[in-house]
Length: 429
Ligand SMILES: NC(=O)c1ccc[n+]([C@@H]2O[C@H](COP(=O)([O-])OP(=O)(O)OC[C@H]3O[C@@H](n4cnc5c(N)ncnc54)[C@H](O)[C@@H]3O)[C@@H](O)[C@H]2O)c1
Image (cartoon, rainbow, N blue to C red; front, side, top):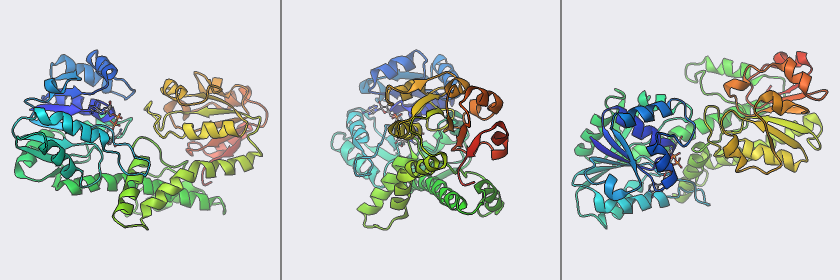
C-alpha cells in the first residue's frame, strides 16, 4: 500500500518507520524543513529507544522516504494519515489549526478512493469538519477515518509494533477493509467502530489514566496525615482483580505532551456541550495545583529552600525520552529559584531541551554526583535508570551536612537512605 504520513513528530516518525517495516511504501511529510533534512539523513530529531535503528533499516530498504512537498507525497496514496500536533487552545479546547491546514494542503492531491485518516488526538466530530474542508476543494471520492494513536514515549517502537489494540473508526466497509488490512500484521485485536467512538476511546483512555494518577495522589496526601504508606496501600488495593497492581504512580501529578492537554480538551468539550460538573474539570484543576501544593509541604518539612543549594535529577517529563513538554522540572526549578534556592541539575538526555526553557542561572552537570556536589537537598524528579541505584554513601560525602532527599517518585524506601544521614521525604509515606 502507498501511505503518506503528515507530520513527522514523535508519532509521525514512529508510524512511518513501522508502516514501512511492514512492507508498505511510506512517505513522511512535514513543513519543518530542518526536521525533514535530518530524517533524510537517517537522524531521528529526538530521543526514542530503538527508533534510530528502525528508521535507518526502513530507509535502506527503500520503503521510507521524506519530503516537505505535498504534490510529491500525496498523489497516488491509498491512505493519507494526519498526525500533526493538536495543542490546547487558551480555553483548553483542542486547537485544530494544524489539522485544518493539512486538510487544505492534501485536498488538491488526493486520488479517487483515498482513505484520509485522522491519527492526531481530536474531539469527536472533527472528521466531519475535516471532510467539509477537503470537499470544498476536492471533487474526488474519499473516505474519512480515525485511527487514534496509543503509543507511549520511551516505548513507542515496541508499542507500535505490538499494540494492545488498534482502534479503527470508519463510516463504510471500503475504509474498514483498507485499514484492517494495513494494521492486521500488528495485532489480532482490531476494534472497528465509528469515528466518534474511536476519538472518544482515545480521550477516555488518557483521561482515565490521568484520573488514576490524580486519584492515587489524593489517597497519598491523606496517608501523610495518619502514618499510612501509599506504597503499602497500593499493594493492598492492587491485589483486588477489579483494580489491578499496575499503573499507580503517586508523585507530582501527570505531565508530558498528552495527558495534560487531553484532560483539558475533555474538560473543555464537556463545558462546550453543557456538562459543567464534569470530573475532568476537577482533575485538570487538581493537577495544575499539584506541584505547588507538594512543594509547599516539602518547604515546611525542611524549613525553607531560601539560600539552599538544590540538586534536581531528571529534566524530561518521564524516563527514556528527551521530551520536556509539561515536564515537572519546568515547574519545580523556577519555583525553587523563586524561593531563593540555587539549582544544579542533570538528565541523561534532556539537558539541551531544558536549557532552552529554564532560566540561565541553572547549573547543568553530567552526573547525579556532580549535581549533588555541595547541595543541601537532592530531588529525584524522574526515575531514569541512572538514578534508581544511587550510591547514598557517595552522595552524602559530596553534599552539605544534614542532607535531605526528596523522592517525588517513591523510588527508594526511607530505610535505604536514612542510614546514610539523609532526611527522606517521599509522597504519601
Ligand atoms: N507524543 C505522543 O506520545 C502521542 C501519543 C499519542 C497521540 N499523540 C497525538 O498525536 C498527535 C501528534 O503528536 P506528536 O507528539 O507527534 O506531535 P509533534 O508536535 O511532535 O509533531 C507534530 C508535527 O507536525 C508538523 N506539522 C504541523 N503542521 C503541519 C502541516 N501543516 N503539514 C505538515 N506537518 C505539519 C510539525 O512540524 C511537527 O513536526 C497529537 O494530536 C497528539 O496528541 C501523541
